[in-house]
Image (cartoon, rainbow, N blue to C red; front, side, top):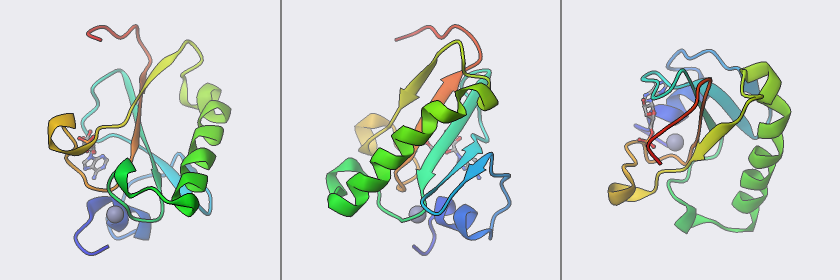
Length: 111
Ligand code: AMP
Ligand code: ZN
């Protein structure tokens, strides 16, 4: 998708070290962390919100949620973490490419 910052990261046009990558997804560090540890997990295919889900995309999202727990130790999230998916304007979504925030590394307040 043209002009999508996350598609550009996935394509390697914007450098961002991948903490995990497979054929369907990548995990990167959030550039403006909101917690001591803040990661973004995203599908390689571009779609913006859960509203655009179809069977193929649901399989990818399922895959991402299956991978996340396997990365807990490596990402320093063994003590727990918060999973956030912002949706649309009221949800505070700023990048219209579906992504799952993982926040941790400390006890999180404010929920
Ligand atoms: P959201 O507000 O839920 O759409 O989340 C977008 C997130 O992407 C924000 O937390 C930003 O800090 C993060 N972000 C934006 N640009 C980059 C980038 N180049 N590398 C890593 N994270 C980014
Ligand atoms: Zn995209």
